[in-house]
Image 1 (cartoon, rainbow, N blue to C red):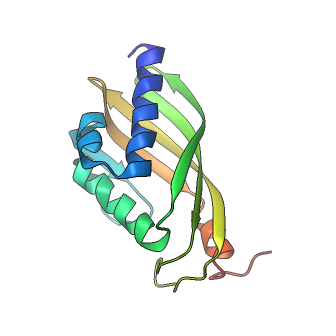
Image 2 (image 1 turned 30 degrees about the horizontal axis):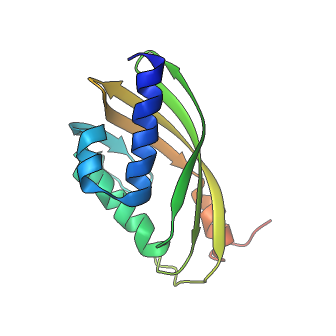
Length: 139
């Protein structure tokens, strides 16, 4: 994909994860996409699989928003650094709502084909999240 098309796709993807718009999800994510998330033992598939991750995040952080801070691409692979911000107003991994605001980084790799995302390997800073919501002592 040309660099401008990649940038446009990634911007639309950020819009999708920030709005949980299922139609937009089907536009930017291939039905056969495979997502490897540290929160799930097995890969998730397609836009519906990604909606599962978004639902999990929104249940703990209803106001969650991601910002794409930087990305770099090579061929059909994109490395992206995000900042996730939100308020811990719901249960998250069994931890009751603390009301704490969080801001953490994530590094993800995206694999693209035919103008859509066909795969992702994500590494969010879950330790940082757990420290910020008071589930794990901060250093």
